[in-house]
Length: 174
Image (cartoon, rainbow, N blue to C red; front, top):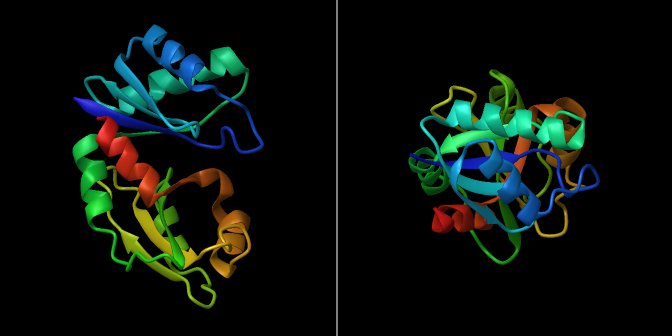
């Protein structure tokens, strides 16, 4: 089955994981047909199950970089359903995101966080049971909006966030 692997906290001030290194590392971890997408910690692999693929990737990353790098593994069909369910309008004035909870209960709490002017937040479902949050914010406010600040304070290490456009590129690479 094709599985998307989304690494948390790489290439954004933490550990730098180059695409070529990630491809080699995942292949050495026993994952097949590895394709990386952009330089932001995204890969698509073939494996028997998403959780197992994520665990294999996390173990390989920890051996290579000496620290835990959380990895979300999600079946491509499930990722496509999450992208398709994005409820907010997409326009040139806003940036569309999906916030993936890495732990149970986090998404519901995030959906209740404060939102700023022009922001929209909606809880969504995810087959892992951890949930997602669909977030739209005015361009240029990704780090400074009310929701972004609340997200940083309350769930920084318990989520990984992707631009909806990036997720569409991950799906296209599958």
